Amino acid sequence: MNIAFIAHDRKKDEMVNFVIAYEQVFKDHMLYSTGTTGKRIMEQTELQVQRFMSGPLGGDQQIGALVAKDEMDLIIFLRDPLMAQPHEPDITALLRLCDVQGIPVATNVATAELLTNALARGEFGWRELVHKYKPGEWQA
Ligand SMILES: O=C(CO)COP(=O)(O)O
Image (cartoon, rainbow, N blue to C red; front, side, top):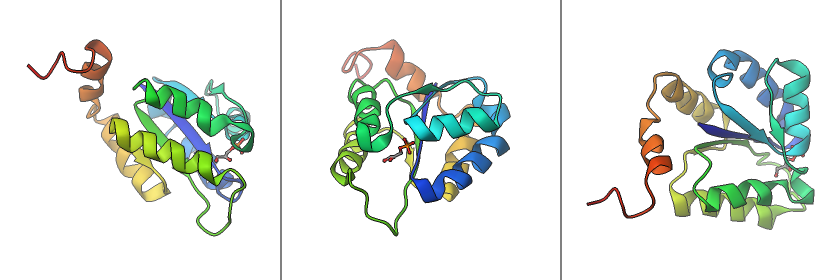
């Protein structure tokens, strides 16, 4: 599965602790992140993460481009609900695209835990079908 990690500054410690807790689950997947979030994760775990640009410089949009192509399977996006972000339109656009494609997205650590446990139990098999067939082909 392709999994993206994104965390706003005041959520980065929470993200790193979360990824450390589930490192054994995430190590079997392709991992992506915005710039600084991925740097922090790689500094504090053994995981390899493909980093995009920092969020305010376009990282959310780069991940959004993969979502638009239905190539991202899970997004863990720990947002800061108490601080305005300069790139709020990019954040809104990314979440909108997740809803367009029906991509599982966690915006707080409680949901992140539920989705990651589902991933660990192998409950993302339906995403394999999305990778295997083009849209429309698997409805018939
Ligand atoms: O701003 C972000 C997401 O909107 C996160 O970007 P960084 O991981 O580069 O801090």
